[in-house]
Image (cartoon, rainbow over all chains, first blue to last red; front, top):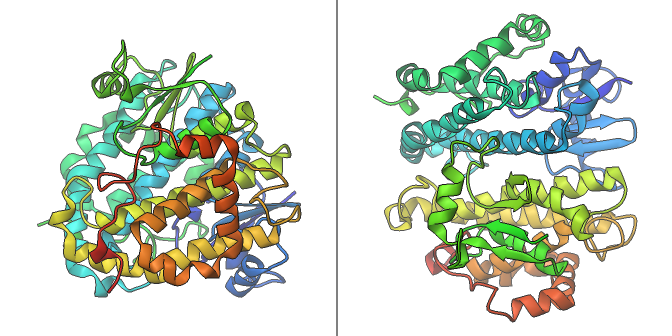
Length: 242
Length: 242
C-alpha cells in the first residue's frame, strides 16, 4: 500500500516531519500536492480537505491517507505510522513518551513559526516586523535554550544510553529532533552557533540521523525541498540578533 | 489506584482539560499541587519535575502520575486516560480522530494564550499590551471562527449523529470542546456573543457536557477554580474589541 501524504508542495514545513519518517523507513509514498497526476496538486488537496462528505475532516495539512484512514496533525500521523514503519519503541510507556516528545516538538515548531508571525498568521511577515523582532529575541534567548536543553536532558536521562531519545534505537522523535536542529540552524545561524555547544548529545543525535543511510540519501535528493522563506523556519537576519 | 495530577494550583489552565476527564468519569485523583500534605504543593511539583533521576521527564505541567507511569502533554495524558475512564471511542480510527481533535484543541488553546502573550511568554501582559491588542483582533476575527467552525463541521459530519464529536457517546474531546467554549466566552464575551450563533451544534454540545451529572457537580464545587487573569483564558476588555 502506497501512503498518500498531502502537504504544501514548496516548503518543508510541518509535512517534513512526516516525510522524514516515511523516508527513513524506505516506505512507498506519494507526496500528493507535488504531483501533476490524477488527484494530485494543491487544488486536489484543497478539494479533498474541504469535502463535506468526509467523516473525519482534517483541520489543515499535512494529512495522510492510508486506504480508508485519513489522519491529520503531525504528531498523530507519526503515532499512527510509527509502528508500521518500525520507528516506535516497543514498550507502551516508551510509546507514550515518544509521543510526548513529539508533542513538545510540535510546541517549539509553532513558536519558531510565530517568530515571524507573532501577530497575524494570515498577514505577511512584512506587516509584523517590529513585533517579530521582539518575539524572535525572546525565542532565541529563552525558548531555544529551554527546549533544546530539555531534549539534552532527555538524552542524558535515557536509561538505554544517550544515543537516542527513547530506548536503544532510532524512533520518530529522533527524526523530528534532527529536523528541529536543522531548522533552527537555518533560521537562527548566529544564535545557534553561539549556543549550540550547550547541547552536545542533541547535536550528536542530529549527526547520527543525518548519517542514516536512507536519510542521507533523502537529504541529497530532489525530494528534499530546500529551506525557504515561505516555510516554518525562515532566515531573516534581522530576527537572528545583532 | 488514585491518579496524581500535577498542575498549577490557582488556575484552570491546561490542567483543566485533564481535570474535566477525571471528574466526568468520577475517577479518584489528587490535584497534587493544591494540597498541603506530604509530596503536595507547588514546591514538591517543581522538585519532582526537575528530578534528574526521572527517565521520562515532563517539559512542563500538567503531568500525571499513575503508579509507575509519569506522562505529560495534555493530549497525551487524555489519550492515555481515555480508555481507562471510558471516555475514548472503541474503534481504532475513531480513537485516532478523537486524538486529532484534541491536538486541534491544543493549537487553539495556545493561540488563545498568545493573545495576551504575543511577544514573550516570560514577560507580563502589561509589557506587551499593544501587540496583544493586534493579535487578539486577528484571533477574534479569523481564528475563533476558523476553529469553532471546524468543530461545528465535525459535528455535522459525524455519521453517528451531531450530539458528540466522535461516535454516539461523549468522549474526552467533547469535554475539551466544552472547556474551549467556556474559556472563549470568559475571555471574549463580546466577540462570542456576536458570533457564537454560527456554531449551534457546538453550543448544544457545550450545554450537553455542562448538564452531565458529574460535570455539573464538579462545576458547582470548590474543585472548579474560577477563571482568572493568571490563566490561559483571561478577560481583558481591551482584547475583546471596541
